[in-house]
Image (tube, rainbow over all chains, first blue to last red; front, side, top):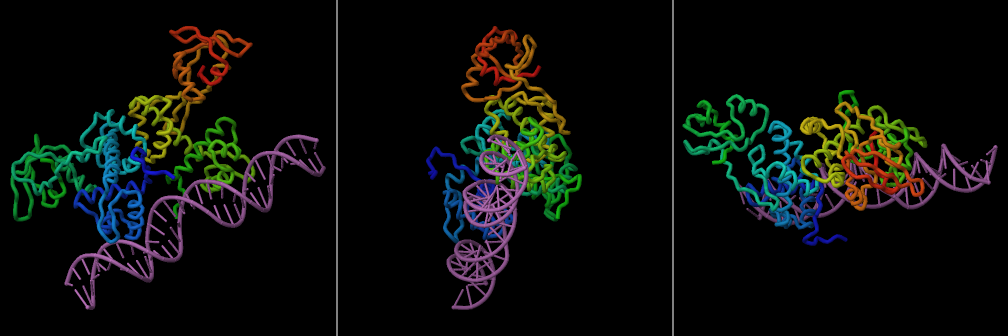
Length: 227
Length: 227
DNA sequence: CTAAATATTTTAATTAATAAAAAATATTTT
DNA sequence: AAAATATTTTTTATTAATTAAAATATTTAG
């Protein structure tokens, strides 16, 4: 019987890793996680979630009491950040070394993130030059699980005339990408909000070395920036 | 119900891919494959092999009649070469981009070879400069499944004074690697057999830009060359 | 050519992981 | 306190892979 010595590296199934990762994302937004939100996010049924919660609780990955909302333990957090680190490093590789578009890499990284070798990830990290952010602007945890806490603020919430950098796009549908292309906005664009129009919530923006444009309130809510 | 249209890309489980790959390796050596050899190679029981054979036959991957030896169909061959292509490209990447030793990459490539995206492999191939051989000297199939047919001949079988290039090492144990280091022999070394000693099957070799050495018959049987 | 040895398949059962419908129970809202 | 909602338990199912033991086919040796 394998015990969980502190130096013993636990292995998780793909499914477990996906659950752990998604619990992290939810708890990152709002502290604790309800079974129903997790079921919704993972497009599965509440009963399936409960099954997995019992399993993860048994492995000391989550703090969990029946009927209560739950959160990752320290060990769970560490595991989540390892998976997220892998995912984001692979995304960086796919875009910056293999030349993929940033909107095409998520699915592939979903597979690559489950490859288990830590030596591989450590070397990949060096090879890529220890990048801090993935192609979507999300921070990449370091080998110790340390992650830059970046506040992503929607363009719609940005104060006037404060320079900001586009860091991520919420809705990554094809129609959204089309719009971004039209306005020549992409991850890394330096941008300022010049005016806000109360009437329809549209805003006037200035893109560095680019024109002044007016974008809809809806679009501005989907573009996130780092100030 | 999904039918197997000619443009429909079949998906295989990791286990199926491993079986297909290993059938390829056996059939590459000796034309047809017996269930028992496959069971031995894969360290499993004959009954498990039969189960898988029925499944692969159902998917038109092998030519199979009960109790007879079997072989890959054209489609099976294509699949096998795709998996082997992935495996060898990843090995090349691990060694030549991430700086792994060539003897440390097999296990990691065993995982990476099952990542499904073909776009990924096509881009990886370009990124690596369309290499022809992996770090063990084995040929990498191209995107169409075309593979350099290289005849690997053991140093012990090499005619006298014919220049050859070390292409692969059969026994990849630590003790073997130690010996190779001692003699300064590695994949790609240009080498000639100068004399053969009948008494103990040892041979005298000349390594390009290196000294003349005598190696044991046992060692010479484990070093393969391309003539 | 036949008996014995060997190889392969079938059968039946097992394990493991995941999923989920339906019923039961707990919590929250009104 | 009742109603609505959320969660868990129970039960059932699926899928994939594995294998011991029995049955059957093939090959080998005498």
